[in-house]
Length: 71
Image 1: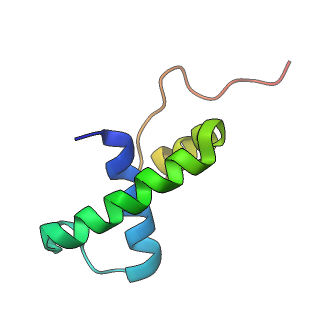
Image 2: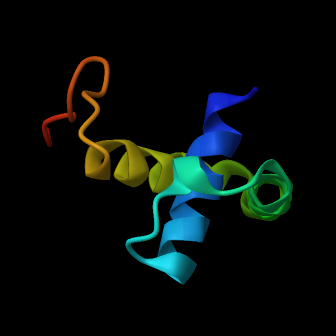
Image 3: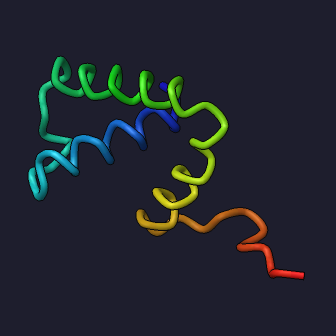
């Protein structure tokens, strides 16, 4: 499964459901949110990179190389 799709699907789901745990949702519901994620990624195109970076930081992941310093 594509990690990007899963990350975006969870973010959309959490925005709608708040504190309900994603992992306990039935597979058919998760698939619906994965489809929403695929559509969002396709619609956003190149702009998705900024949103994915924000999602990764929000989930506590370290980005490779860290943030770039302004010149």
